Image (cartoon, rainbow, N blue to C red; front, side, top):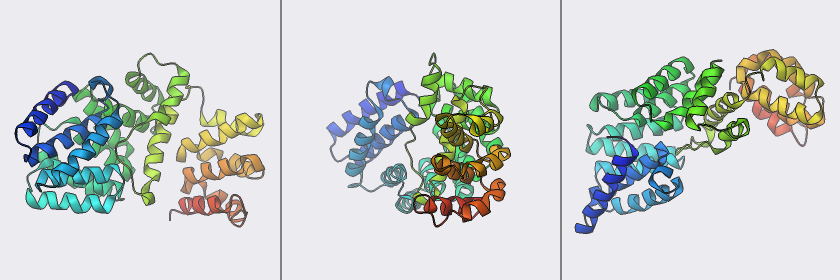
Length: 338
């Protein structure tokens, strides 16, 4: 079964197997995969260690597995590449895994991750579908791969349905809680999003909730060109952690009339809401005139994206400014949809 206890038992058995046969290459690959799953599923504390311990353990087992090439060894190499944001290497190793065993569902999941982090989430969904067909009793990390690919395509509604069904199917699938919370918040379902955060960290207070996004652990990285997808995911968790009476309207008012400290927070938080903060574009354009608000306002407008078209002239005027010009150019690209 796909849970911490059974994974720990599998790790113990696999270690014994390698002690009996130090040349048992597939066991090293299976150990690497098990360690990666501990990291991905946030089981470290339950198994008495933190996630970095299992990450570095997986890394070591990948190096041992590479000496005995199999479909599984290439799969764990691909996963390591994904977790480091090395999309091209991940695609190459996942392709080798599928070539050796087209019926290995984990190889298809590794390929899906490689495609998602390199900006091809729609194609990634095809590989997730194949993996689910090959393994109908699929574990929750398949749901994570599918849900995040959907999120990366911008299909928030379907992503919420997939994550929600995954949690109903396996209520202990903690790796799904924060992504689901993020998507719900971005859909405007903030009460549900907040409840999911509290399910992830029962009993935590407001300050603890607001610190959660900074501790959000994802074992994979988007490549540099597509890193904004991860930022959108984090921003959704940030929205979910806000008190429910903090809204786009209240933040807009704070930006216009608050003290400098609260104005800075308001500009930053408006960016978290993305396109849903479109009504605040005029206030953010006004904030561009205030030096201490300028950078936060620029970034917020970029996160709002195409609905912030009205800000283009003001941002163009800032492109050659010494301190903020580079940020203005970057955010203009997002607003223009480039």
